[in-house]
Length: 423
Image 1 (cartoon, rainbow, N blue to C red):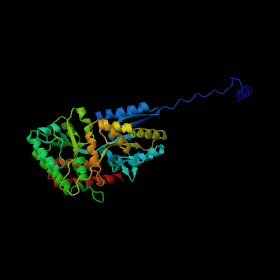
Image 2 (cartoon, helix red, strand yellow):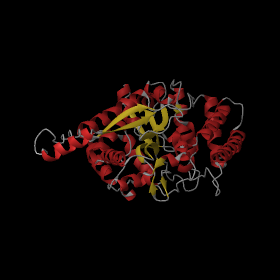
Image 3 (tube, one colour):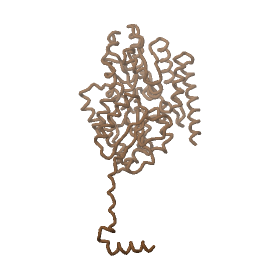
Image 4 (tube, rainbow, N blue to C red):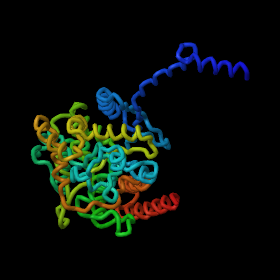
C-alpha cells in the first residue's frame, strides 16, 4: 500500500514528465468491408454468369463484398439467398427467416417503389399486400421455339410459326412425315402444361378457397391432346426439368415450349436459325388468349441482419436494379428487365441483337387475365405429384381426366398436411 501511494504521489508531482505519462492508445484499425454470402442452387453455367456480375460489383464497391456460395438442402439462410421458382413455396413457408425487400431498402434509406417494376412482374406472388418480398432478378415466361431448318425441310413457312395448338398439331404431322423423330417436346411440364396453359386460356388452377382445381375441361382437353400426340410420336417427353432444351439445341427436336430466357443461351450451344413465337393457345376457347405468367429466380434477404449488413444488402440490390446491369442480365441471360426504365433502355440496346424471346414474352404478358393465387409449379410436393400423374398419362396407365383428378386430390391433401405441419 505504501509503495502504491508513493507511486501515485510521484506521478502527481511529475505528471508533466514522460516518467508517468499515460501511454497513448493505438489507433483503431479501419473497419474492413462488410462481406455478404449469396447462397444459390444454380447449375455450373448459371453460377459462372452470376459470378461475373458479383465480381463486377465487388470491384466497384469498397465497403461491401459479396461471395457466392452453394446452398445445400436444409441449410439455414445466408445474408442473401437466390431462390428458384420451384423453391418459392419453401421460402414463403419460412418467411419469418427473411425480411421483406422493401423494408430492407427503407431501413437502409434507399427506398424503392414497387410501381417502378415492369407490369408483368407485379402480378407475381412475391408481391404480398403491396409489399415486395424479394427481388424478381431472373424472370421469364414460356414461349414456342421452332427449328427453321426443320420447318423448311417439311415444307412449312419458318417465318409463320404455329399460333394455336391445332396449327401446332398440323405442323407436327408435317414434320414427322418429313423424317423428324421429335416434332414437339416441352421442358418444365407442370409450369408450362398446367400453370401457363391454364392462365393463357383463362382457366383456373384453384377455387375461391385456394384449393387446387386444375382438373377442369380445358386442362383435361389439353392433357388428353398431349397424350394422343405422345402415342402418335408427335410429342416426345424427356423429363421434368429442362432436359428437352438440350434435345432442341442439338437439333433432335423441331418444336419446343420452354422459357423465353432460353433464347439467349441457344447461340452458345451452337443452335442458330431458331424462330420464336408466343405459346400456342386453344382457339376454340372463348376469350383466349389471355396472358402467360412470369416467374424465375428471386433474391431474398435474411432477417436479423446487423445494420451494416442491411445497408450492404441494400447496396447490392440497388446495383442489380441499375439500368446497365439490367441490360446486361437481359443480353446474357435473356431475362425480363425489372423496371420500366431498364426495359426502355434495354429496348434501344437490344435493337442490335436478335432477342426474339424477349419480344414474344412481352407480347403475351400484356394480357388482362387475372393473376392466379396458386401456382402449381411453385409448391414442391404438388409439383412432384402433378409430374407423376402426367407421366402416368404419357405411359398410357391413366386417361387424362383420372390423372388430373388424382393430381388435384393428392395435391390438396399434400397442401393440407403442409398447413398442419406449420401450426
